[in-house]
Image (cartoon, rainbow, N blue to C red):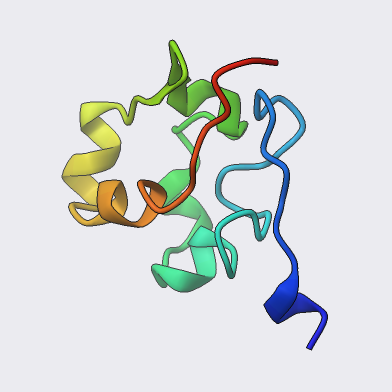
Length: 81
C-alpha cells in the first residue's frame, strides 16, 4: 500500500540509477526485461538522460528500447534544482 502511494523526487537525477532504481515504478531493467549486458555501455545515472529539464534519450538507447520514451515521459522533470 505504501509503495502504491509513494513517488520519487527525481530532482536533478544525480543520485538515481536510471536502470536499477524504482524511480518510475519497477526498475527499468526489470520492467523492460533487460539483461545487464544490454545496458552496460549506457550511462547509469538518471541525470545523463536529462538535458535542459527535458528527457534526452540517446539514439543508441531508443534503438534498443523503442518504447522507453513513452515510459519516461510519464515522469515530470522539475524545471529547477
